[in-house]
Structures are given as structure tokens and as C-alpha cells.
Image 1 (cartoon, rainbow, N blue to C red):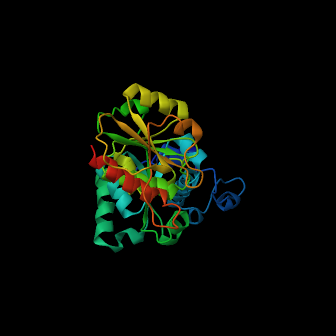
Image 2: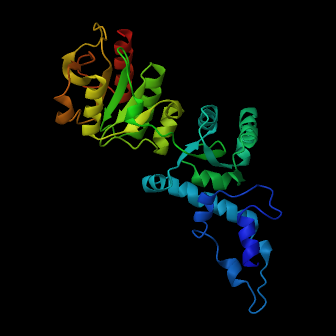
Image 3: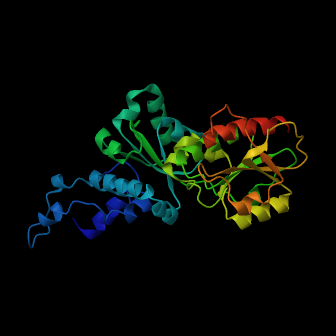
Length: 314
């Protein structure tokens, strides 16, 4: 295969009808490719049996490399991309007009009318698709029962400056909430209960972690969520006039306080609680009354209860 022709194939020229391959995919093609075809070129004639090296396998290998890289935090940070897996999550990304760079799909996606409709919608939206068999996609999936679709997307670009709460608004602050499932569930709950954003402090699960994205069920596509240092968060709170309310087992019951200012509701680490440098800035401490002998609630459950009570006072 001449070099110019090979380059043309990577640009989507020639007989392959799938369109141009994303540049992010081409970047990773040198990883994990079978060297066998090169060894089958006969000396002096430059010929190779292409039946052993189909062009489509090059695209699949590139997608596999990209998806595996995006399972890692350093890969997501380097590329500025993340993963959405499953029918509902990819639907949510499309509906929220998130930029989808690519999608890997398998026959399992078309096993239901909803999945088939999603595949059609991805095509209509111009999302490049790479088809692979169910087994190959399952090997890339992070879920026990893959639904035949994994999408590569550009996470929304939020900043603290975009969080401009008014009196009665609530912003959730996570201080060292490590479990990605809890972080995702809190984002979903916060959006549903009317919070206007979320701030993740040191030690909190990274916001593009696939488990966070999945647990949020699309909330992070629509809901401003930013990572910040303690100093940045405290400076933001002073700048916008937000009162810091923290969870504390010795605190008062939530509810009964008319919100006359924005509130930053701080939820702490599942085991260690809120760090002193944040806790000492609090203007109110809240506790959920529990039955005798029960020490604590799951942090995502506590977030839902507190948000409901605080928002009732808005």
C-alpha cells in the first residue's frame, strides 16, 4: 500500500463510506495494531495481502485506543474529552447539544426501537460512527450490561464566574466526596431540586470520571459544575455574597430560615467530614435528625434531604 494512499484512507478517502476519521483517533493508531500484515509484505515488491488487514480494522483500533485512554484521568485531561456510555446518557448528550466527537456502536444498540432511533439520531447529527461487534464494545464498556453505544464528548466548559447566584439560590459544594457514584448522584439530585450549580473541592471525584458522568444521568450536561481550590471557592462566596452552610452532626435541623442571600451548601467527605479551613467559615451548621443508633446517611441521600429542606425556605 503506497504511503499516499494509506494517508488518504485515514482521511476518509477511497471506498470506505464512513467519512473522515477523527484526528484524535488517528493520534492513537500506532498503539495496539497488529504488526502481522507488515511481516507479510514480500521483499522487493511492496505487496501485502490486504485481506489480513482490512481498512475498517484500522478505524476500530483507533477508537479502541481512544476510549481506553479516556478511561484514565490523565487521558481525559490531555485530550479534553470524556465518555458517555449507554442509550439514555447519549440521548441526554444529544438533547443538551453537547459536542459528540465520535461514537462506537455495536449491533446491541439496534436490539430495541429506542436504540435504533438513537443510532439514526447520531447519524442525522453528523456524529462519526464506528461499528464493532458486541464483544469488542463490551470489552471497552464500564458497565456490566453494555447497551451497544459509547460516545466521546467534549465536556461543557464551566467556570466559577458563571455561578452568579441571587438571594434564595443554592450552590452545592463538595468537600472531598470521593465516591464517583455519589458525586454523580448529587449532581442529578441538585439539578432536580433547583440548585444552580456545583463546586468540587480538593479530594472530590473528578467530574469527568465515567462513573460520575453516568451517575449524574446527564445532569452534568446541563448543570454548571466546576472544580476549584478552597481559596477560589471562599473568594467566590465572598464575591457573590453567599453564606456557607455546612453539615455537622451537632448542628441544627434544616428548615425554618428564610433565605435572604445565596447559600453555598457544603457536603463533606463520607468519613472525615468537612475540613477545618472550610468549616470555620460557616455561618450555619445543619444536621439531619436520625433514629437512635444510626450514625450517618449516605452523602448523596443527605444531599437530597438537605437540598429539599433548604429550597423550601427559598
